[in-house]
Length: 152
Image (cartoon, rainbow, N blue to C red):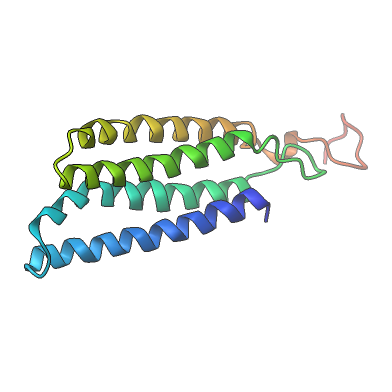
């Protein structure tokens, strides 16, 4: 498994723990055992679990398992995947920061929450761009030890 995939999967598992903890706080607030302002964590909870966990896990596995560009094992540049990972992590952090600022009554909470979706869209676009060139059939790739015009 490439290093970038390992980092993405580990970060996704960290976000899973954060998201489940946020869900536990939300359930406690619903039951009345925690303060009601914790309901402001509902929207960031969704972003953390969708973008921080599910999409990041999918991106890490896709980077690892999609077909390679060549039979030698070239996956292409990891830069788009790395930038997509940074965008996903920033989106989850910005969603959390916006919720915390909103709970404290800071007006910057809405502005921060507005940055979440553009960061996620940028990450999705980069992930699609990274994987698009690798999602070609294997038969179109040159094979070592076989003439280029030869059919199987």
